[in-house]
Every structure is written in structure tokens, then in C-alpha cells.
Image 1 (cartoon, one colour):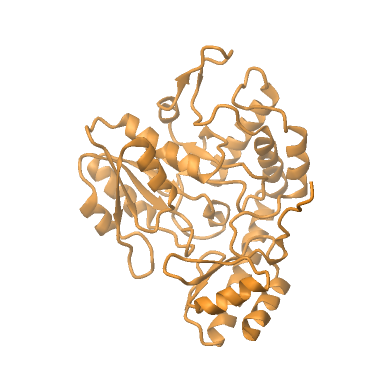
Image 2: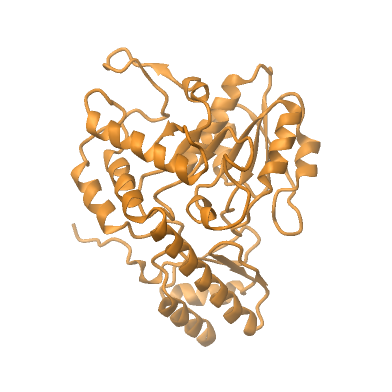
Length: 349
């Protein structure tokens, strides 16, 4: 094969990163194992239970239920599916802030539910009052984001949970990216901070597991059971995951990454990433750009499109927000030296 994989040396907009070496080795050992058939592949099934248990520890849930998904899109879709299946409304709806990940649009389309998007506040966080205006007795799910994709904002999860309780809806938190940073902050975002029903948290993002390794968590086993279908030709009686055959490599890689990094390694990753984000924000602001103050290790700044194109021509992998700002995600592979070189090229552009 002639092609080579992407070199991470100039990747500044991805929410994936280079896997931890232990995770890479573990993934290789379990490439042929299928956690979707746990009776045939019991070793990887055991690893998956261990991953779910540790993800529960990270997210403040002592008895977690769920599985290792392909990523945030699948986990978010499963949250919508679980809420729809439990709803007795003829036409259930989902209410989320407009900053929600685009996977919820996919979920609404696939599952035939209405997605209602509420405007965010001046800090680009969900506005509970706006969410409440859209919620009604047919609302099956209220969604909050803990680490938005575009700006790294953390929604007021307890306030959103109060809205959900008022209309009898489930609560889902999309912490796909932020879930491995937020344990080291004082933000209220997890199962211990609010009556959250389901959560997305992806080891293959800040967790440094290989792709694909997402996480779908539920407070109650009944929520997961509501997703299950019979599997008559397998030894296991039913299957709750969206996909059938799944990646044993992702499960084993996630287990190895968690073993190697939780909690101290993830704390160091977060602190280094946030320091880099703050350094970059200061560098951009000192050059006259309007910068959105980073909350998590993500920087957005109003850099002209022509300048961004010049940076791309120099090989920098950067992407814009929906509003057109330059967006840089300070993942574990992003070093201060990379950012210094990036700013030098920005100056030249």
C-alpha cells in the first residue's frame, strides 16, 4: 500500500489523537474479537464490562450500564432511541441547544422524532429558559452538552435536568469530547451532579484509545434493556448495541488506555491542553484577533477565511466553526512547539 496515514504534526482541529502505546498494542491483540458475540468471545466481553465500570467511575456513576460503541454518533443515537422507546407520546420530540452535535439531526431523521433546537445564551451555553419554552408533555429527551464541539462550552446540566423533570423527559449528556477533561474541573456535568439518565463519553477522543471506541452509559439497566433485540442464532439471548459485529480492538484499546492514564495521566493531559489553549488564545488576542475565551482545551478566534486558507496551504489541518471562526483543539498530540510554529505561519500569512 502506497499511502501513509495522516501525520499528527500539523493536525489542530481533530478531536481524535494518537492512541497511547499500550492501547495500540492491546488493540492489535484483539483485532479479531467481536464483543457483539460475548459468549463466543468472553475475554473481550469481560474487558468491555471493565471499560464500562471505569467510565462510570469517571462520570460519577457507581453502578453503570452500557457498552463500548463506535463513537459519539452511535451513543447519541442510542440515547434518542432509548428515550423514544420509553415515551408514550404519539409524536415524541427531543429538545436540545442549537450547539448540540450534528449527530442528533441524524438520530432524529433515522428514528422519526422531532428535534427542537433552543437558542444558546451569550456564552454559547444552553439556555434553560429557552429549552423550557420548547419542551412539552411529548418531550422524550432533554439534551445537554458537556464540552461542545465548536467552542468547548459546558451546558448547565442540573438546570436542564430540572426542565426534563418538569415535563417527564429523560436527560442525556453528550460528553463525547469533554468527559475526559471535566473530572479535573469544578463544573457540574455528570451523573453525580444531576439526575442524568444517559451519557456519551468517547475513549477515542481525549481518552487516547484507538478509533473506534465510544461509550454509551445509562444510570438504569432498564434503559439499556429497552434497546435490546432478540438474537436467535447467537448463544447470547439479546443485543442492545446498535451495531452487531463490533470492534474488539476498540474495547481492548480503551481498557489499556484507561489502565495507563486514569486518573493522573488524564489530569496531566487536561492541564497541558488547557495551558496550551490559554497560550494560543493570548497569542491570537495580542495580534488583534477576537478570541472566544477557552473553558476547555479548545480555542476559537475570528481569523479571516483567506488567512485560514493560507495556513491550510502550509499543511495545517484546521477547521472553522459554523460561524466561521478558526477552531483549534489542543489534544494530547498538540505541543507548545506546534502552536509556536502555527503562530509563526499565521504571522507570515
